[in-house]
Length: 442
Image 1 (cartoon, helix red, strand yellow):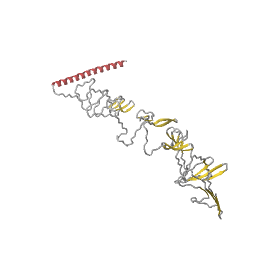
Image 2 (cartoon, rainbow, N blue to C red):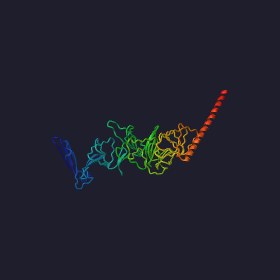
Image 3 (cartoon, rainbow, N blue to C red):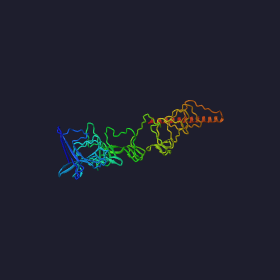
Image 4 (tube, rainbow, N blue to C red):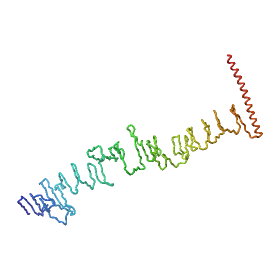
């Protein structure tokens, strides 16, 4: 064993022991040196205040070949600070070891600075953990019961059983309300945005005066089995799909939650093209592949029908003509370009002059008729009442004896009628005078 000591003029003390005891269990320890009163030493130099020397084989470095400093209180504890560099490609490793517990010792510091990385076992941190750079974990990590790790689908966050996951953001000059997270994922799976009680797989509660959801670009896809509903509310109670509904079969309801047609509207409908004509050049264009007259392109209750064969029926579902009305038709003006066929009674309040020919099998005038132009009667004229002629009557014949005879016969008939009328007139006049005398005698 060698003992050495030295004292400089600057009160520098250098004390050391050097020995080699082959029987000692600490046979790998060769020397210890203590330097006290020495001036501060730069970190990256190879000079030290206290050293522990050991001799090793650089060609046979083992992971357990450490140079150790021992700290011991007899009968109470024994521990060591060890250092080794088993892998020449990596920096060395410091270890705190409890000799009596045969386990790694604890380290208590007020501040721990890690320049590169830490590879340790379990950690218990009783106060706040602040990380300036990042935390990296090769396996799952647990934070306040929440597991952060990786699953077969990628990164994952797993909350404790029966608990949800909340995401918060803090305003620049505001506070976080723990009861109002920005996004909340319940333990059952539904996601709430602005609500902690999501009532659907994704439930958004936005500001009533702002937008709850906006798609800046791109489309919205709804699967074939999905139902789209826009609810309404009556006296505080929600009515599902009351404003707008799209069923899985494609039926669309406006004001109707159970549409039984492709478009089922409960309420009024207003269509306004606003002057912008589509390719069909129609505000409302109806097109289908139906062709039968008892099938309809347009139907209004049991009142109005537009048949697929191109006919229009009013109160008749099977119109027999291009326009078929069952009932009364009223119009202020009727313009008929071609024929008009009236099978019933035609009542005319006023007959205006016609440009063409008025033809009828039977013409009946109940009150009076005035003919200003020439009138031609091709057959017999029968007058059951009086015939008054203000001017002369001219008979134009063809000059034949048969026509003259017929004309004379007609004149004779007229004279006989006139004579009979005069006789009846005298008798009526006499009767009137007789009645007047009877009334005067009373």
